[in-house]
Image (tube, rainbow, N blue to C red; front, side, top):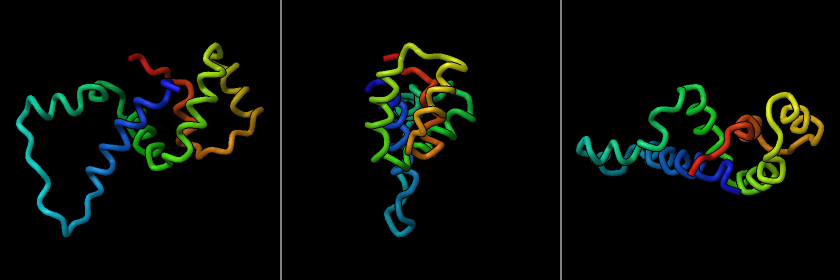
Amino acid sequence: MKRLSLYLLTAALFTVWLAAPAFAQAPPSFPPPELDRLVARIALYPDSLLAQILAGATYADQIPDAARWGDQHHYLTGQALANAIQEDQLPWDPSVQALLPFPVNI
């Protein structure tokens, strides 16, 4: 279940923070060391992957099932993984499915 969980949990928290209502108080200002700590886990990922993570984080209800599927198919890579995703006709949003090939290194 770790395969997607860390990516998506981080992205979900970041998305919620960004989506605060406009009428709420001004967003907090973070000193550089604190900001570095907040984004350290995702800062060096490519922008295209971060975009997928943030999009996938909006489907939080699908993440546990996708993570279980990913753990059950951890031995698949490349075209074999793509074939399994297509053959299983996974019901999750494409943004969630797009994260299945990326392992989580904790």
